[in-house]
Length: 499
View 1: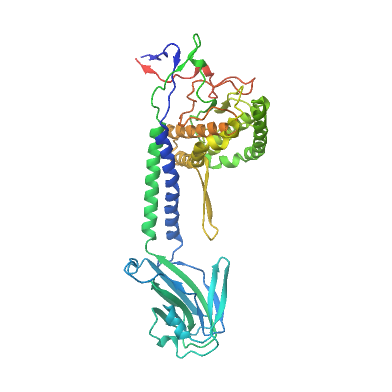
View 2: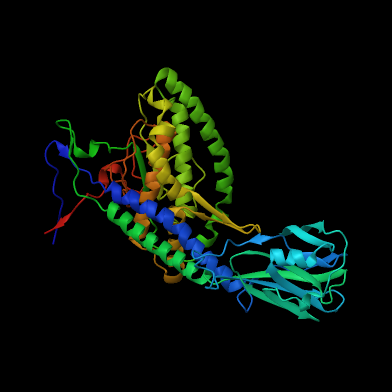
């Protein structure tokens, strides 16, 4: 059996493309799905670890004191009772107040309509709690009343919606109802001088279905988005062939984007090394942080040079390409593909490293496009890049925060976990990651004013750039290789037929 490679038609060469619309829709679905999934998982984690045995989320116990006859909450309005209050009899939320007298005497806790509480307390002095904060614990007290006495003890009143009284710790649980309510803590006989250790808690009956709904919906969107991304990234077949000058070999045709990004996965990868590659790459991160400051400054300089002369100064161009090349090697090693265990070299130039990047030097650039392409024309791509390489941060009022990388970070983490537990790095997943990074760097080159060629809306997967050849290296003395270890003219053919 021999392998036969069909030659291209005379004077023509073909490339392959993907479906941009399903690809973009899939990425947008993943953009929506990841926060939903993380929200569902975070909510499930909170319910599993932060609730007590009765299902309540509770505040820490803190001591509150007053010289008056009662500590009162602010008036809380849960809406007017009526036929539209569908939640009133569904026990969707339950409030719990727990109190223990500081001197072991009997304590009273009650919740009642605000008008009844105000009528009972009358002109007696009491303190209203407001601006309650838990981290750090703090509150404000507002003195109400004129100093009169209570007419009777709170335990003999019949208007309480919920109440609890006695020595030791008293707990009151109340299912929320429409209306305006006030909670009070008092001595059981209604005498002045209240000192209690108090905590509050809440239980929401709909949290469990909400967590499941968020998780399932987020997972479905991510799955659907992934399927659309894979479908959109599949090649459509030969594109409209590009004309080749008579006598010019097909290999000499440049791709429709001047950016060439390649990356070859090691045949064997260490299962656990990816867990510490970010740490091993810290020296690179420090150098790259400084280099990217240089990159920004040189891009600003190049902006004015292009605006005046229509040319990107070759020395600045070569240096910025080298910074992008260095960045890609480090990302390929540690953060965006984990495709090799070989430590990246400290150099801006081409090497025999399994990841490489090049950008064809433009002899001329549009003076007008330089004013709008980085922010206006590139806006659709920048939205996509926000999903591919952005950082999503989440947090709560208590200061708990965590960050998740974009789609590239999530897929890289998935690849690492597969490698850790199975010893395998699926080739389709690696090809997808390289394709996503290829998209990112094409847009980066366009935004950084290094080309006037608009980035294609397609995902070219695989280790070798589908353009067919590497463009002329931006460093004149560097060999024109694919970055995969073989010369450009020795690339594997686009398609092979076994006969």
